[in-house]
Image (cartoon, rainbow, N blue to C red; front, side, top):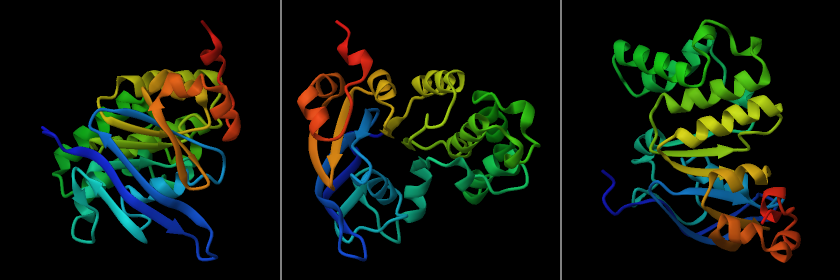
Length: 246
């Protein structure tokens, strides 16, 4: 289906904030379809800025962002946003309709799908994340873990080929965190996961990118990088308990 196209490619991507602080500095990365990649780094490393570039929320100042080998431009923005689903850290940023049903239907409706297709996608997606019994509830009445799943459903209902998650397990209790991990394991998508939850990255990804101060400082197999205690310490990261087991 995707032939030999790259899912995501960054070519010399640089971005500076209005005060001149460099958030990303000459970043070049290629991610293939079906790869599951962790994006690691301390606070302020540039992870959220990078994520914003992947569906045109943030526009490249220098360099190019390509999705399926196609540069993101005003002309390609709509198709890119249908292919790249981004789930932000705070679900309250993503739930704004009267009911969860309408939140999850919002994307498919904007894609111009028929009412029957929209309904089918909403029902299937909410069932998949375990919220089908709550579809008429407003987002504000859900628990935080339920909000996280509803926000994920609002993106999955568009059936993106590329899923980008910003801290998907932050502020979840252990049971909700486990449920989120088990659900993400089943998804057949290209996955880019920005997280401080290093056990999550260890369990869910095969490749990791380490960012620090806007620079890509490491790119390799997740388990190899996480076992490199000097690398992790130098860039403000802990070695996760799973990495110390024989």
